[in-house]
View 1: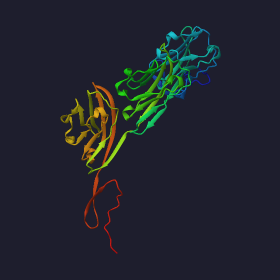
View 2 (view 1 turned 120 degrees about the vertical axis):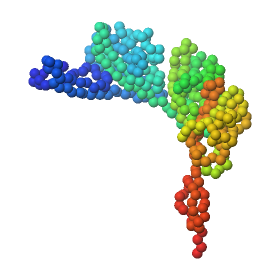
View 3 (view 1 turned 180 degrees about the horizontal axis):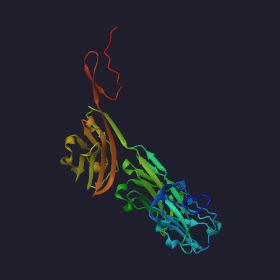
View 4 (view 1 turned 90 degrees about the vertical axis):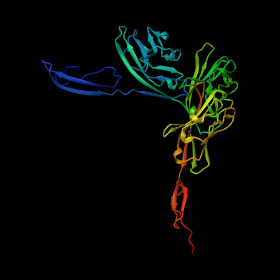
Length: 406
């Protein structure tokens, strides 16, 4: 604070290097400790944001200053959410041993940064895991704060969107990097860290896959030579709606490349008119499923009910909700064919809702699909002759007209 003799009522506070948003209260007291006045000021510090597409090889978090910084100063970049050290510069050189392992071999700062004032940080192979706010702090040799700034990073992940029912979908990853022939390529599902596909020593490694992706994935031949690391996924459903990460490792285990793709499969929608003999909720997946699987169909909305259960090689009618007794059927040899579709007899408007089929093997989820069913009711209308007729409520609501003779 500065005492301005020309403005005796000026109680303003100057704050150096603001970084955070807070509310500050100034209170004035007399000698007895009584409050004479009080005022609140809300400080809102806008954090600059850097936004890049996932395909970039690196991204820079900019920070330049015109202050004269001492040559024995310490520069520290931190990730705010988990308080992880991203990069440390001290005593004229980087200090990689102080970095968190997630940033090893991925960060770089400019030379002579204390002389030039360019404290920007370059981050290699950014993914949406790096979507954080980062703080750069400069300390004196005594540990006093000299300078601080924040930068928010947002990495946009490319998205692949397909209709329900397609045979395959490709998650595209291509690179111009010269990859060593002994490199390892891993595709991972990010939400639950399930291994999707592994390529190593010149061939696929299916034994390392999670069961959810067995017999469902394929990669191109000579992928390390061509740089086409795309993954083909067979019979995708909305159960596969995830973010997938492709990582290439050197023989020593260092990350050479990392890219992400988000998959979105539109939810299956089925419409039928009330009065139909039956309706099918489709679900096809790869065949030769394990014999110990449990296939469960349930209605999740508007309320949950168990619709059909297949387990231990046969249907389990005692586990059904009473509203579906004797109304559901699944195909024979469904584990061999992979056709897990459900047939529902005599559908009515009450059957409209969201249905979900989940497949478990030894209590491990391996498949899933959502189907939205709409059963269109039949409205009764009376024509001019007094005859009551049924018609679908979804057609043109114009009243039925009787035949008129001239």
